[in-house]
Image (cartoon, rainbow, N blue to C red; front, side, top):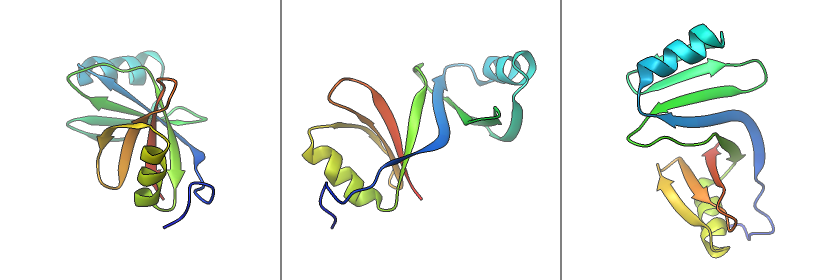
Length: 111
């Protein structure tokens, strides 16, 4: 396992938000803002906004935009973050949300 000094986190082009109404979100982001729909499932919309990909996730709660980071090894990243005192908010196996020591939430995905 890599030490925290060896773990490389880097930003990617993804931002996620959580909404309680996927149809209203589809109308707003697709029709009002004109973002290009890349893919759609029952609980997620993926838009190409130009500079970043916007993932709109259906959820019981709403969220502010969540920036995304990429890593080559999610297990090492998880360990690095927990060792640093970060809270793992949601662990989805190959990706996770964590809260940094200042309260900001980030998404981490394994490349």
